[in-house]
Amino acid sequence: MDDLDWAWQEMALKVRLSEIDGDAFESFFAAIAKAAWGDDFQATIPMGSRGDLKCDGYRRSEGRVFQLYGPRYGQAKVDDALKKIDEDFRGAKAHWGSQMRSWTFVAGLYASRTPSEILLSVADLDTKLGVPAKVWSRDDIIALAKTLSSEDRRRLLGAPPQRADMVRHVTYENIGRALTYVRGHQADSDLAPVSLPPPIDVKAQYNLLSAPAKRFLSVGQTGAAHVQRYLSDQVDPSEAQRMADGFSTRYKAVVAEGAEPDAAFGAMVGYAGGGSTDMAREAAALAVVAHFFSTCEIFDRPPADWQPAT
Image: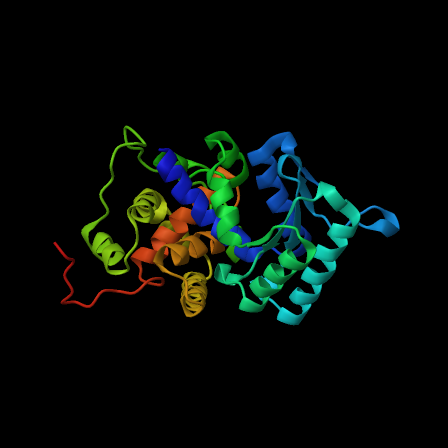
């Protein structure tokens, strides 16, 4: 189950890192670093006119000063980033002296793509200041999160809903409506394999979804029929179509941004109200995504003559 837990948590983590910036980015990184390194890591806060001494976090055993950069939407303004690197690296050197044995610039940039100018600037200052330095991307934060204990990962990132969770009270917050109680038949074991209905399985294969993503989709199918029933019961008959249009529009935007299949699946779960450690919201989100996957509002419908590879 830990592999499935991590597949869900990695998906949620990518969504979370794409949504947060500024102080929220700093706080989230600090929470992961503290869980990974314990008392060896300390986040900092600004104090008066001296600020934070050009340090957002410090790992004592390595003498490593972390500086965080979380621009909105992960879009770097390169000139601003270069100015920040120069001021913060030089400032940290002045404030920390021999206590700083390495410096790391943690950049929350879109798709973990770091502009060459940033890498070159850090390498240049590494040489000039005589302090080993590196740039971390979102991928490095994800790699650090993967080292956490299963308990810490569940605490920070949640865990995948199981079929039993489809019967709980869930919400549909991200698109503005609440779902009612979702009840259904439970399988004997949450660990038992579940087969997707043939048309859904073919569509999942056509869209190149991974085995973990297909597993999550199969769990979501347990609640998908209840989502359909809820939508059918709405007083406003256009409600279901508005929701479908909203999901379709969001999916197209995610794909246009270059998201690969599993990343797009995670983005849809996040859009439906996931991305938290609240199991009720996660279960609702997964059920809603499974419903819109089956009705073809999200992901491509395979051509009629398409056959999966054998």
